[in-house]
Image (cartoon, rainbow, N blue to C red; front, side, top):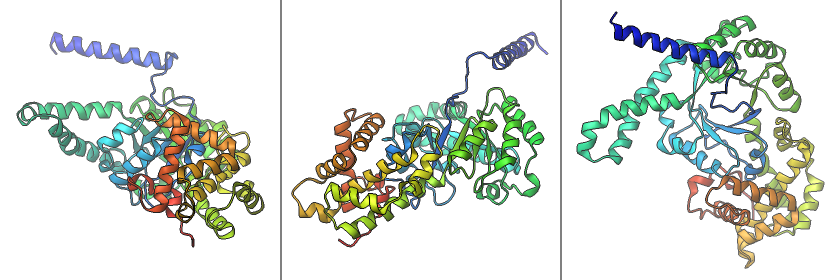
Length: 434
């Protein structure tokens, strides 16, 4: 070995040793995933999976949104979802199931790119999918972007080395999620080649987590029971995993639909719980409640009539909205928060219904804001603040609320100038006899 090679190797070892020492001796946290996240909401870009029209109010109670899904997901509907979530007052990150779901727009709008790697599945789930993704980025996505930005002669001169650099940079900036898939009947297990024999005991899960944390440098170890609640078994795995990692965050996902389950998984060692389907259930509920209200009240009720009908017809404690809000530790009174948010959906519905707009001279945005303020004044203020916090262009709450009401009205009347942005909203699917 030459002197230069020997010195270089020694230097690399010193740097590695310094990093290990910093990690184990408690120096500043270098993990880009915030340590104080306790609750993440998973949003599926699939067009059939809708967002509640009052989504900024719901999402102000979560710490972040994970965007990703496995069925009927495309680059286009992923971009649409990120555009919509840009109005939410919390960060959204991208967890793609396919490399082609990653575009320049999703990269610009996402807080970070989260790449899954399965620790107890087939080799394809650990490195094969990542390899395919890197090949797509290196050979297609980055060159296409460079060809747009660089003159032809310059691209031919520096395109290849720049593509290599950009691919390595994207990989270095990405967050890696090391999954332990524990429900062999789930879609995640089928995709990863996990069957009953691959379900890990706490002791083996601990070993895999140590590899992810110390060798793979995974930022997250994700104990996944997708489709079911792990209960005591998951708690045992979480305790073993949490005791074994230094820098990685420990996440739990699967069957979280109430406060007790959230509390149990956090107490067992999870830094964060991930909640999925129960958020989309709120959107379906908004459609059902609004359709019932229109049938009972007609298209142009007063704020008092809306409130009286809601109090008589809807039990807030039994709603999907309350169930979702119970999953997050931030909400002291989930039933009251659910009531506020569902009243917002009703006010936006009646403010923007085409028949109501045609019957009056009041612009739909003004009507919706008036109904909001009269039906649930606290909710109107909170919605305005949440929209302003999420929208970098409209920092004033009143302006942000007016703009949002206009967009909801456009979605309901099929005149939306940006239909791709709003077709994920629940009220865009509302069908009533007017």
